Picture (tube, one colour):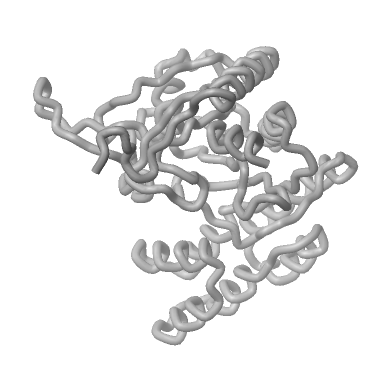
Length: 321
């Protein structure tokens, strides 16, 4: 093997790509800071338990090694969001609303459905301390503005709410293993696997799960879902939030769709989730959502919402198109 070869899934930016990246990075930081978002640079390495928290998916993507100085397990950050939760937890309680932005290289043990490589450059913004839908609208607008600044136009926004899936799981009194299995099935949108799952188990609300996995489309599915889940107050509240998003964005130049069975690989999402798509790409270009319970690991419970994307991937795609 030649010494100059990089490990699989690890790449770099040189020449025009490096220049385009730096130009976009500066533009994004100006955009974020102009809207009141504080720029932070989290460390590459932290104690592993701080990085992975209670997320199995983040744990699986995190490189870990033993620190010879402390004797504790360290990890290389594979996701910036848990680090932002730690940073926010150190702020004064009086700081009700905090805004953070970042553009930072991360490292993952393997590429996933969202990141094309194991060494993305994660850019994003996060809003802490705002419970209402207005906070989600703010970060969604900022996500769309970020893509536009890079040169990605004509995007489609997809909205979902993981509270729907979580509420049905709770009502069905599922154990953690069954929830994890269903989460994987819903993430893959595999109706045959869902049928096999319920054929092998007697579980309450199997019909609701079968309905939920196929509830995607335009705003008309929201009324359909309201009828299907009318006996689930938590689900009805989640649908109302999606209707508010539709009312706000329906007159914009963005296409809208809804996926009520959407779940995220990162288990910390527990409410509204959203993603940006484009016809020229087979996967989401940016994504985000609510993770109100993430900061509990640091001794505080904070409402939080945000988004992120792989800036390096988008720069590479823009120059190759």
